[in-house]
Amino acid sequence: MIMIYTFIALSMPTVVFAVVNILFFGFNLDWFPTQGSVDVTLATGSFAYIISRVHHLILPAVTLALISTVAIIYYLRSEIIDYETSDFVLTARSKGATENKIYTNHILRNAFLPIASTIGFVITGLFTGSVFIETTFGYPGMGELFISSIVSRDFPVANTLVMFYAVLTVVAIALSDIIISIIDPRIRIK
Image (cartoon, rainbow, N blue to C red; front, side, top):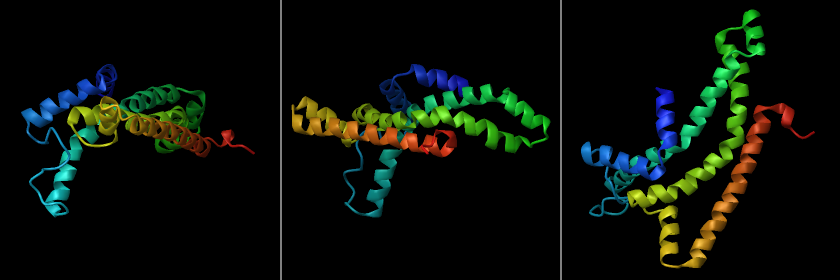
């Protein structure tokens, strides 16, 4: 099931995945609204207003999260499969270590290293992917602000958002380096 999901989601563009979710969950099942961020008939600040905000946010957030986590799931699965037959795992099994201890101490610890190195790009992708999601769902946010500033030729806003995304990329990559040094102590600077 995981492989089928990852192959489909990796080959599908974000906009197409968003439109499929809108058609299925918004129109066919009528579970979620398809446009906007809140029901305009509700009074601002009321409990119903807050619930409406959350209800409008669920489908775009889940769509973006599912698309963004596909690469992580794919890499983690392949790394786990690779490490399950490694010599150090076979040695730990022959010494009588429990499967739980083998997975937590040996397999997962090593399998998370490539994912930790790409987590910065995943965080950046969440923000830059929001451009497509917010435009498709008509959800007001930074992504829609970026597109509307380009269309209306508001270059100071567009440049500010580009700089924000650049700073976010640098911070996210630094965060992934910190995570790698926590997971693998061999990488720490002495």
